[in-house]
Every structure is written in structure tokens, then in C-alpha cells.
Length: 121
Image (cartoon, rainbow, N blue to C red):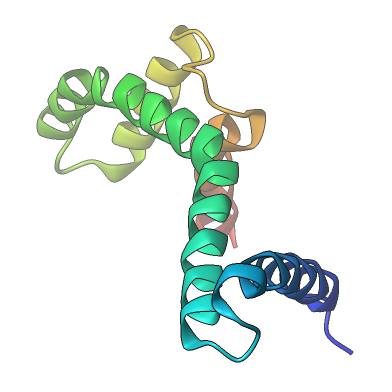
């Protein structure tokens, strides 16, 4: 038994219901009924995922706004990775949440901590 079985069961249930509806006009054994069932399932899944896509695009746009400052830091500290990481952390700390989840905001700090731990070993 896989962890994805509930997802599989839900999608199978949905496509079977769509196929049952389309079997009335096209016939149960019709390839058209199955083809349109798949197309409608894909459209339905994309509609369900649309809010996540919009949120992802907006987060990317917010991050793009900070690229010039981050590029400037990379140019300034191109030979000193340690200092670059520290300055990047300072930059991120000085910014509002950037619309990112807490886990994503913690990545630079986690990276710096791992780097220091590896260096101190």
C-alpha cells in the first residue's frame, strides 16, 4: 500500500463520475466518453491548482524585485563566500517577510549554520 493510494482513489472516483455523466450522450463504450473524461479531469485539476499557481507567480515577482540588491552583494563579495552569506542574511533580515513562508525565509540562515558547522569540524 502506497501513501498516494488515497489520492489515486479520489482521482479514480472523480474520473469515473465524469465518465458516467458523459456515457449518457456518447455511450459507455465510446472512446469519446473516455477522452472527454480525461480532458475534463485535467481542466478540473488545473482549476483546483490555480490559486497555488497564482501565489507562486506573485512570490516569484516579489523575489525578482530583490535581485538587483542580491546581484550587487554577489559582485561585491565574489571572492569571500563567508562574507557574502553573512551580508545576504543581513539583507534578508532587513526585509519584510517577502511574502515567503517561514521555512523559505530560514533557508539562508540554515545554509550559513551548516556551513559554519562544517568549517568548525
